[in-house]
Amino acid sequence: MMRDWWGPACYDWALAASEARGLAARRRWLVGSASGRVVEIGAGTGLNLRHYRPERVTSLVALEPDAAMGQRLLGRAATLRVPFEWQPVAVEEADLPDGGFDTAVVTLTLCTVADPVAAVAAIWRWLVPGGRLLFIEHVAARGARGLLQRAANPLWSPVAGGCDLHRDTLATLREAGMSVSDCDRFALPAAGPLLAACVAGVAWRPPIGEPDPAMSVLAPWGAAW
Image 1: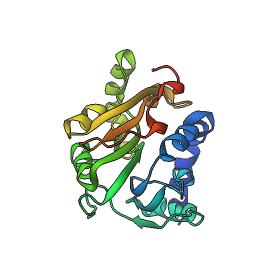
Image 2: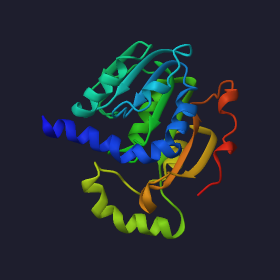
Image 3: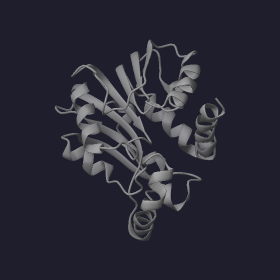
Image 4: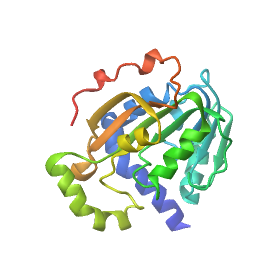
């Protein structure tokens, strides 16, 4: 029981400084644009839940394989004013209908999945044509930081839930056939040199639908790292 409580609490604690210094605002801006039938991949402890807008979202399915994380997720979902379902499975194991969702959401998850190519392919199938993937992801850095990530990866990944420090997530999205319409590279506040490199944006399953004005410009979020 102690271990079940400790893991999710440490996860929230580790992100607390970043949330306070801008990550929560990015979540609100991104997740707040989700609409229709939504699937969230790697929902964790539910840090995104308070940002879904009930006037826009008709239903939400959350995938989170870790049972302890899921219990905290359910606690936060208690006040959610959207029909909600938690599925305790990883993206690779989920059995969801093809074309069953208008929006997919993934935040700080694709760096940890065992097979990012298969994960993005599943998301592509689950989205309707013209559906959107909203993402905030930790990604490979450039230059000296990228070299540091590569060097640290063999030691970091086994103790960080399989997190791969040096994934090119944008390339994975595009290779799966997603069209990335908006993208902002930024430094995750209070994350340190290994985890700071992040990207936020919108990817579409073609044919691209009508762009959402709320998601058309990412420039206000500052300079790229």
